[in-house]
Amino acid sequence: MAHPRLRIRLTAAAESIVRSGHPWIFENSVREQNRAGTSGELAVIYDRNDRFMAIGLYDPDSVLRIRVLHSGKPLTIDDAWWKARLEASFSRREGILDEQTNACRLINGESDGWPGLVLDCYAGTLVLKLYTFAWAAHLDSIIRLMKGASIGRPTNTSPANLVLRLSRNVQPSFAAKGIKDGQVLFGTSLQNPAIFRETGILFEADVLAGQKTGFFLDQRENRRAVESLARGADVLNAFSFSGGFSLYAARGGAKFVTDLDISSHALAGAKRNFQLNQNDLSIVACRHETIQVNAFDWLAQNPGTKFDLIVLDPPSLAKREKERAEAIRAYEKLAAHALTHLRSGGKLVAASCSAHVSADEFFDAMRRAAITSRRKFRLLNTTRHAPDHPATFPEAEYLKCMFLELD
Image (cartoon, rainbow, N blue to C red):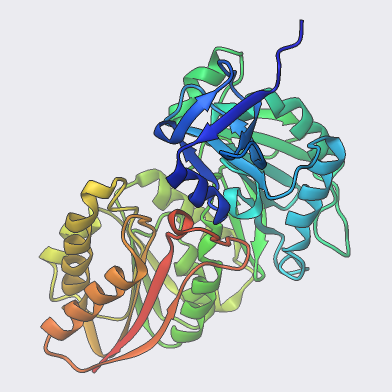
């Protein structure tokens, strides 16, 4: 016998939050429900007057109990609705993919109406990253959608492969259903790493086991900006990962690029990325050095080594709200150490991916470091999210970057 529809009522405060368009409903916001729900079930939220408010994915095992798919007027969520939502997400990326760039984010979670789901494209390979077990119930439908998808107007290329990546916290739940992180959901000729182009530069992405979905696509616009600043420069790329900023700096005319990273695997990837671009004379002409080291320690202990351009792009320093204050102090200290390595007229490019540290807090920390250095400085630019990484609610805002020039 079929269960009655899962009906949810919320606290008054939560009702207001949902009406404002926020996509998250937490466990303590649920005031009443007609029965126990199952993971991935569609939960319908009604207000105190029994009027439809929203519908979302139910997750009984998470404090983030419901992820809202739609709010406003009632509608039917069926295959046609999912297809239209996918096409809308793809349409918002028109103009990003072209002959020189065949990688981008196609779906950015809640901000594209797909809560807890990310979809990245690397040439013909799609990588699906799931952050909630609620999507397990819909995985077959997602696979059918992706098989029929067309990517990158006007070429409308069909994906060759779909790889599943899982957030660490949901991997055990998926494993219980025989689904693993790095599993190929369709496609028989998967190349790993996937080779893709970004603004004409070739990169590899470890789509099966690399960080996130295999590469950090969100820094594309900032990498392009670094290229425009690098002519004739000695460049330090701290927390370099696989050398994204370094390749752009080299193509921009940098004389020498030094990569610092604690991971030998990441540095090996940077070397391979340089090898992929041996047909570019500017990249070939740039000397490239890698140093496996804790970048925090190296910046603090080698003040005599000078550069014309320094890129600071550390991993998140505040994974929880309680770590926010310490992270702000760490960002300021990191920038202060970096400035001791900057020559007169040099430029600092500092980024943060810590969602718990606001843009204003991060930018203020960078300014304090510059003021403390007793050097005159000029703000060149600040940037936020790339066009394919929209952030439509406060908790989704994580990326910020500041460009400073020091005397």
